[in-house]
Image (cartoon, rainbow, N blue to C red; front, side, top):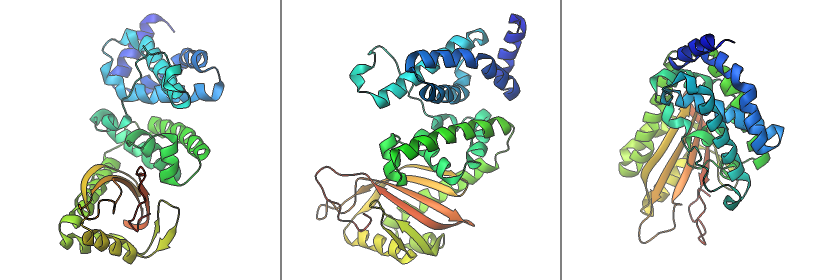
Length: 314
């Protein structure tokens, strides 16, 4: 490929042409993979780093001002992704101290109009288990393998395999829906807004409860942190009244992320002085919908240090 042609493709890609962007990534993939292989030394990890690098490059493309600098920029991203993987697998003192790791999540860039609609559309095509894993990994604060395993109730090995497959499918659907409309994003906005209003609202005004219960199936399944599963909306309702009686409430909604029929909500609790250990400090609530109604709910409570949870949501 001649320099002038490559420069033309780079400029078009930076201006948001998805076809040119794919050509550019395919053109440079061998060089990027070579960087990952040199740092990580094994094929599976190198493949993961390349996928992470492409996702990061997609979402940070607006930061690159000079098309001629695309390859060096992509190589730096790849190296940072490699060291980020190493940091998760090895003690920090084994990573070079002068390496500045990329710590920008996809979440911030989901709000960019140029990429947002395609990203949300691509995410909605992932199977439920893969979508849940990708959301937690890229859009939440509890994003280590062990934390995702605890939240989803599966082994760490399963989390890793789901994440690997999820990233592959995300990129594939992303490429196929570059010109997607905003329906998936608008749907996500609706569910985020609904739960952000109703869930904490119930703790400040019990009048919100009937409206919230209208969005929950009577025979809903609840899965607790321990893995225990029970059935019945009344159990969720009783839990809210129990929190009321002990003076506990949701003090903050840290995040709410929705895609398709799945929503993940991270909330913080505040307990009364009389019952300081009633609710855990942080909880992840995962809602699974059927026909717009929650049919399954999964709770994950962040563990306290030297404190046994007393809430029934354990």
